[in-house]
Length: 216
Image (cartoon, rainbow, N blue to C red; front, side):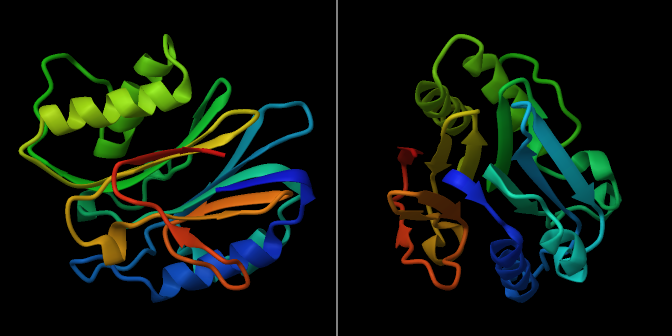
């Protein structure tokens, strides 16, 4: 996730992100090549979303052609289930109204006492978060999401959420194991703020502790 005080050309950072994804493997050894997406705020204040089912590192030209802007969310997908691959609708970011959302995690045996819309886990998490955002500010909504999922699951190995509105970017970082894979990292300067699943070159990233909810 990117938040900049002035127009930021994302091409170089996006290519570094794609290279990170090419090298990364999940704990099970799966690649991060089941498609990708990006959202950014247009001049009219609305989110623009671009998605592809190709591996992100195969689309360098598209990454370099992204327009300058002040807020971006990037996501690369690794599907746990073969039957859920090659579906563009399953690729993040997801956007609605003022918000754009990305998620990564591993939740075991969630059983909620209320119905939640969505065909896959990330969609259900997004729809839960939207219901909380309808009555609470982002930081409180993220905290409520974390508490609800932990309470109604057999176990939460990790639950990392990135959220942006038209002013700020927010992150929920939670992991009960494997911090070397699930930790989130942040970078802050007076003009630029970044949150990433791994440190990216040329920026002095710092790890977020598990349980952190960050507002940049």
